[in-house]
Length: 502
Image (cartoon, rainbow, N blue to C red; front, side, top):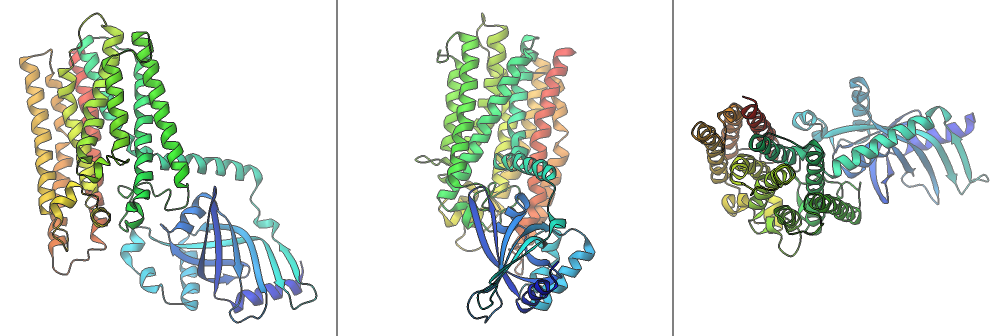
């Protein structure tokens, strides 16, 4: 330990009040200035958790910092390599808060905002240095190094954590939690097939599900790429886990080129699985069959949703494309694969599965529809004419009363439809089964979403409403809509299986 060097380093840290921090994930470097305080060699700073630097630190905690005291002549600075982590301990958060406030009170209104704290927008970070390079061109010894081996991360830990972070990165890029939108229709299609044919091929079902998920992943990535190119995601200041895309490009986690390449790879994977299934069922990859046409329709809708030149979501057809793609198209494909494997000699009776796919199709469209409430300003700014924009745009403040009435009406229609479909199973047991009436149970969750949405709508209409925070308070309605869709899909699946057994 060099006590003289330590004194010089701590002295320079004491003279400065802000530093430049460099972060990077992949080939996406970023730099930003932040105010900081220090406790010895440990450095504390504040930033917003959705910021680019915070997002990159979460994935890659290794940072580079430059500290140069204001007014210092020539080149006199600290170059710091270290590991940054988000502080979670309440006592240490309070410590970081006080340190930052001693340097500047510019961010105090945000740091004290209960809404921002509750929603984990406010963040405090600590940098533990591994190497500090002291630079002073006025001294005889212009470069000096201070190493901190105690702050070095164990190699094995680094490899394991790095691997897990990378897996999490790709799962976020494809928006894996939303694969429920694919699982539901594929499962419903397969369950109706089991109900119709009294037999099932699990291997083909597995490949069908994988192909559909890859197509969904490709659609999500293509959506992110296209919305980045139009500036839609960049202009969206009210993004959340349910709207505004994955934010991979905006957070500097993936380049737009990488997102595009991944999208193409996902679609190619889905296409290869579809052609392989067509080969197994009909002898040739491009044999003309319902599966081939369903596959073409699915890929077309996935690409055209936001991709040029059609950009369906920008012209008011996005909701319809999603309802078709994640309703009838996936359910029909799943059903046909089982039909062609089990009863190839008979004609394909597709009306039962087409009827069964309507509820999941409408509900997945409503997920997109209610998520568009938060996207309103960004969509309107870039000319994305979603149905929420078309029906809520008054030229000034959005009037969500019409789109919310559509949302409620579609929910009531869905459950009325399930009721009629279940009752029809009593009259015509080859078409449906009364067991699917269990899919009415999620109406309780849907009703709760409608009530929460109605209360939210009243608050939005108030003259003194905080329209910067209120969109985030709609998140529970977003969650409830997703839950309603998945529960209905799973209960329909169970209903058709029970209708086969009993």
